Length: 162
Image 1 (cartoon, rainbow, N blue to C red):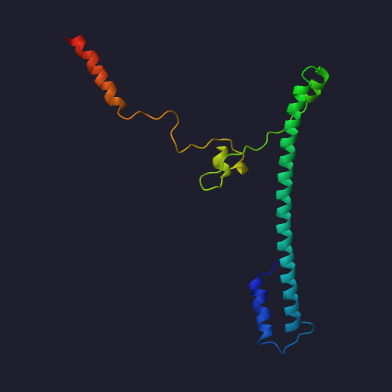
Image 2 (cartoon, helix red, strand yellow):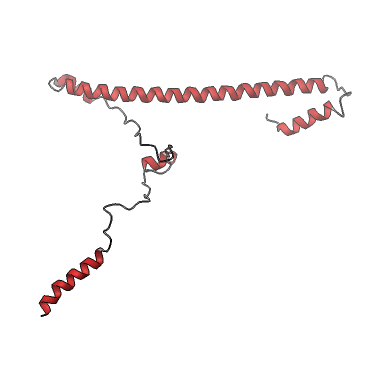
């Protein structure tokens, strides 16, 4: 059961001031204050445990990525080594490793946006649609290219008309 902290803090405050001399069985200002402190300590322990958990998850992901990259290299070397050994090549052919995450160069600000670097929408949605890029694709147009073409057409058309 979760009680809003502001309500309990207000009640503890009342028992610490206006109701400081009042005692209802085992309920008084001291017992409420002690339990409120225990809640604060437990909350701090939870926050610390969550931070430790997040750090452990990050470390695990880094180690898994390192293992995957190393395994991919090992598999590639083993395939080259086993080129003349059909049995070993067949065994290696059965091993399928997932592709590692693509690493991209950091943007100008030094940070990368996962969606921008992979060219996909939010990966949590499971969509593989590509996002449009801000820059145009292909070669840049030459300045005044239309004028040059029209001059050439006039030059070619002029002798034919004479």
